[in-house]
Length: 100
Image (cartoon, rainbow, N blue to C red; front, top):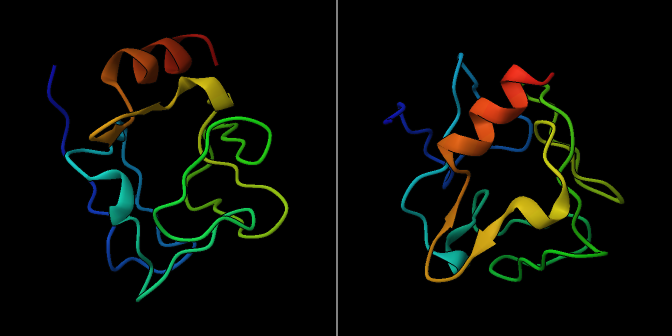
């Protein structure tokens, strides 16, 4: 299933535009930038760690908070697959939408 992709690079904090579906598509792990740098929960751009330091939780459009917490959309830390790409899978989206 294919959703419309939201581009991340160049968006300002809190500028996430979420329709009925959100997919983070085709971005490389080091490619998160807001302006020239993105700091999320004290992490520097390209330094995404899934675990105790980065928590991604709850589906509120535009609810990005930079500081001690990062909340996106009802996802828990372990749900991010980080390899050559960072993506929010459609299966997870459907799961959380159906169970929210």
